[in-house]
Image 1 (spheres, rainbow, N blue to C red):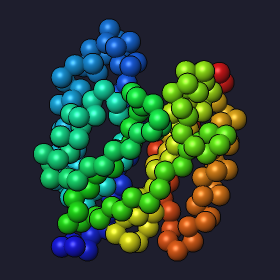
Image 2 (image 1 turned 45 degrees about the horizontal axis):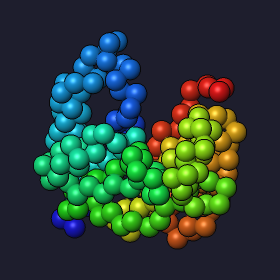
Image 3 (image 1 turned 90 degrees about the vertical axis):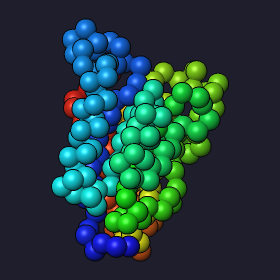
Length: 193
């Protein structure tokens, strides 16, 4: 690697999903080309100041191709992983970095289902999204052989968040060779559904 700069992690929920259309009336820029331009400008500003940034995005779906192309155009190497591999139209995690600063190595993906496996298409159709078991997983990368970076996005209900927290803690405790940084959309606002 050409740099000894430590990576900076820039993580957020891009909210590229079916609900965007609902916000169109209240926030017209969200569902228009302006939204894409805002995201692009955020990435550009971040990279000018910190070219060693590792981006971790959640809830990428409709804009996946646009976001991957944007990241490539900015000189980054992006990787995407569906929240649930066995269904079409699943949200995606996106990791991206400039490999001259931060080398990303995929380690694993863990599903927050009762079996630990992704839900089948049939199971997804029978499982209400609000239960938290729909499209939920975590993805782990190793960064520069110095630490693990784990992205997650638990459901809205507190019992599911607690279950995910226990699973993440157990998963992290198994990876004793390097420290782990957990990032994501934790749905930390108070929500009882």
